[in-house]
Length: 400
Image (tube, rainbow, N blue to C red; front, side):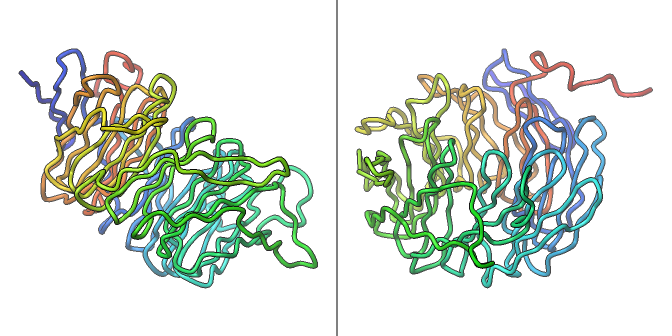
């Protein structure tokens, strides 16, 4: 028996009677497609970006009455990615060729960089000092966006990673910031050794060459992910396959990739996202696809999938794992988000449902106790991750 709870125009269908999940709030500020959202893991802030070329900052401290703090309209074309760093700033990128740095307190755009091509993806170092951008320029550019010491290179391009022969569509940064992985339309996966901090030479960015290039996919590589300790890398592509790689470090500091296992028939359609488990689920790797399936694999050995989890009726567009490693979240073009327990039988715990008129979910961003979803209609929703009983502090009695 399932139980359905309605709130804010959405619903959560509970597959586990012990769970109590509902929509915390709905954000309806955007008028058109929401392409990216980022929920700060500590500060109660949500950043959203849309195809209307705007970025909005939301105060999510009161989930019953979220407030838009400010609206940034600094891009002239669709914003493709947004990342928060610290509690004061965020970085956005766009098809207008720009990477911009905004201060959420002063509402000032502190810097913008001409990428010389549409920008598709961003990755930030763990301390928020460096931003890596990939796109249609083919080169990956590294910008210094913050510094506790020498300010000479702040808001400058400090390094350029040269080697791709096509647009870059995915970036992944190792947890210790020593390795950058990239992929794109040239079917290649490249590993780049990082030696942070970077400094310009003669006011020009340092040029970095990759230490390893592999061309194992037979199509564009759409997604990359490192595991918790950075020893493994997973990739998925338009060729319907996933591959898990061992990241090797040489005696002289060089990096390399060796294939541990692959499955050319991992899915029946494009693989949109790959993700490793965390903590208790760190031995798992997950993949989501246009075939609407979530597949669970042994990260170290591959073999037959541990589970092919069916629940969505349209393509999976994004996939993430909770910080505790207990659950996976998938969002889909069927206007639902599903939460799956990462232990056998990998059952769906909750289905988060919105009206079909809102269109497909495009992305999901996870925090500590909540997660945010973004849909084609421009709707942003903030949901509880585990349930009312565990996070009662998020809920207040509505005023009379």
